[in-house]
Image 1 (cartoon, rainbow, N blue to C red):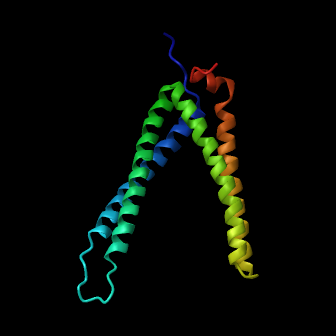
Image 2 (cartoon, helix red, strand yellow; image 1 turned 90 degrees about the vertical axis):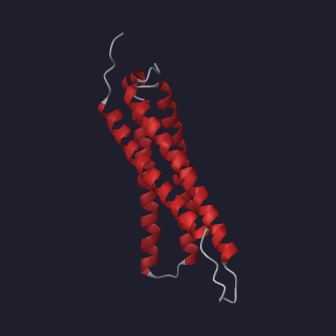
Image 3 (cartoon, rainbow, N blue to C red; image 1 turned 180 degrees about the vertical axis):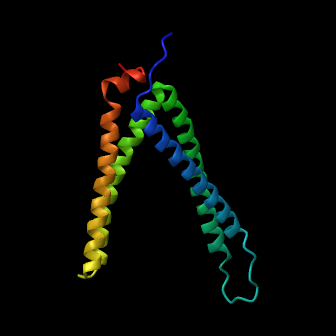
Length: 163
């Protein structure tokens, strides 16, 4: 069997994937730890109000979100290995995640601009905040679009066996 030559762009995408995976794992572990600490906070018997149920609720929510982030981070590490080895399933998952990322960027850019515009007064800082949010969203969409385009290049598809 002939050894496949990995395109440089795939290596870069794989490196970005492992960095994202590590950050997601660290974030997930942090949220799980914070959630655990919040939910087991001792009850203050001298207080007039009991905030224990609220703290437990936020602790459980934090731990749940952390667990999801941890699972996604582990998935990114698996995807990293698949990208490096030229597995077809890694190409498919990367395409799906890029499309989801583009959709989320479009929605968050549009709703973020509307939300910021509705909350802001007519100050210059508020306008700069809205513009920077829109520009950041457009840059994120462009980056995902370039990666998506690259993954559909014939030599990249051939590396993943998607000819």
